[in-house]
Length: 141
Ligand code: AMP
Ligand code: ZN
Image (tube, rainbow, N blue to C red; front, side, top):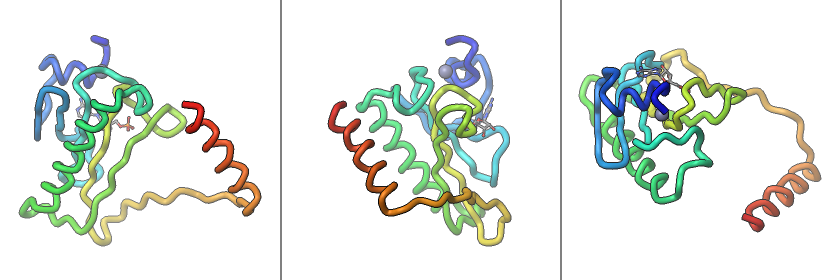
């Protein structure tokens, strides 16, 4: 996967401001932050999307997400009133780099960045039907 920008960061071919690193996971500063302190967390093995990551690796990544999110709250001068933890899968969901990653974004009161999705109409019956269909897939997995 040597065309992947995040694989190039892992290998050192591209520079990054590293925040944390262990055998399985790397955390580094986003090059176009939504706020100061915006960090990305990635598995060191290339998986395109969340569903491709093996469970053990997912747990290792999530531990670092938690570690970074906590550290951001503690960081002096960052003025963190809240955080968003985001993870996009597929172009339709806004994924631009196809090496699975989590964003941890510090938020400030009145910072003007609003994650506001539109909502759709959904009846009790529809939610019931979708719950059953999704549950079928979980049971079949
Ligand atoms: P996504 O839309 O979830 O795929 O987000 C990709 C993120 O990767 C964006 O926030 C970019 O700013 C960030 N990004 C892209 N290239 C680099 C890079 N070389 N170093 C750090 N962050 C990057
Ligand atoms: Zn990659």
